[in-house]
Length: 340
Ligand code: TXA
Ligand code: MG
Image (spheres, rainbow, N blue to C red):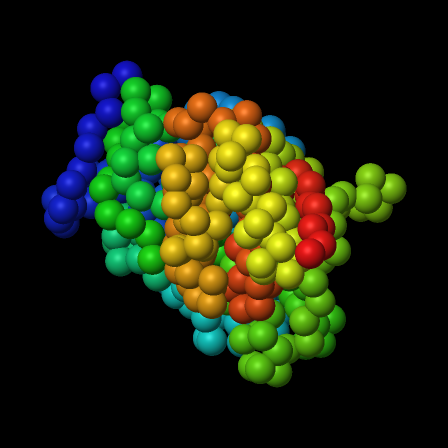
């Protein structure tokens, strides 16, 4: 398939891509978090194509993206006061809210479940595209299943060139990790199913009672029900096995230098180490820079001749929790501690 590239997209391009979506075709586009692979949420065939292109397990439901709250009734019903408060505080933005679904959307979107994940993105291209399509747009991250999410146009092209009819170039994503996914529960209680740039600290400061899903920091307990099906699947992983190294900073850096001499790939912070197989993911004290750079850094190891990778552990505060969660999943929860 020939993939049409849209650079510096204008109204005419947006209308064409919107029409493609409305007609059941898939289009990859930028959001403020990561690139998404879009399809009409109302069209079974289009949603099935998204699963097929990504080789995504069909029990992992998709997020329905809307351009404003006016589109919400198409996808969700019974919007609780807690959910309404979330929208007024964080939409448009990197927050996905789980709500009871309508019968209008394709059952494939929710993998047969009764709830739908809904997000109103902040990126102007994403919102104008959904507006031009005139339908809610499902969009999982635009990576092939299992790989780190693409945070720039070039990586999206690397995964999807020849597999989709259109990709919109929107440059680099400003956030770099996927949206926060929350399940509003009774009263003021929110359960965070996936951490992101809308942090637990922000939600607590806004007066919500916040509960972290245990699967954010620990592997699945197969005896318990899974609230977020995405947690079941291997994710974000480079080809070589990855180990997170924790401990006192100097001891960790000494250990990483030893591993570097043995030919391992090293993932650390800016300015800490240098070498052919060393990649940095932001500054040690700046979680925003880590979230912007983590996925691109993880992907680079696939182009290096390394058989194992060792990574510095981020501080899991603020958006750092999302960074740590993605790194843990890339490492399949493989952590080691070093002592001086
Ligand atoms: O930032 C984002 O959210 C990006 C951009 C493109 O908007 N999209 C994204 O989609 O990350 P995806 O499909 O890669 O991740 C969706 C996550 C998965 O972990 C999925 O299991 C969860 O949301 N999810 C979807 N519907 C759900 C539901 N009804 N209940 C619980 N979790 C759900
Ligand atoms: Mg994804």
